[in-house]
Length: 164
Image (cartoon, rainbow, N blue to C red; front, side):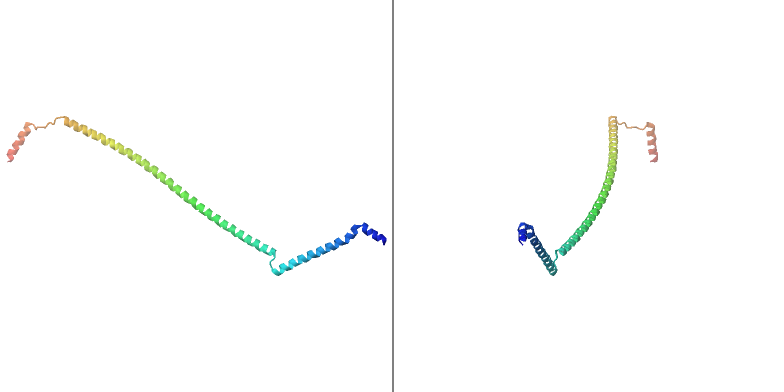
């Protein structure tokens, strides 16, 4: 027995060897009791965080899908509006080209008519000048009255007498 007493104090690991197992067993029992109590508490309250997370994630997915659909619809609406704007712009450009062509034709007609009016004005001016020069020439020459020759006068007076 003396030998055993000597072995115990000289080997401290043997003395501590029995205590760590008991300490570990007690910790394990406390851990199991805690997990069991949490599970029982969740089962009775019905509000398991996993269920809440699943529901929340499904709601988030539904909102995301709805937002995506709304974005797709708005994008399609914008595309349609943009296409309508492009079509309207094309119509306006075509109308503008038509107006430009009509304006160019009208301007050429106006130019042609202006040239014709200028030509007519020149013709009228030359006619006025020739008419004025003809009047001036008539005014410068003395007016000579023609007398009928004497024999015409004699015959004319004889006829008047015979009629009367």
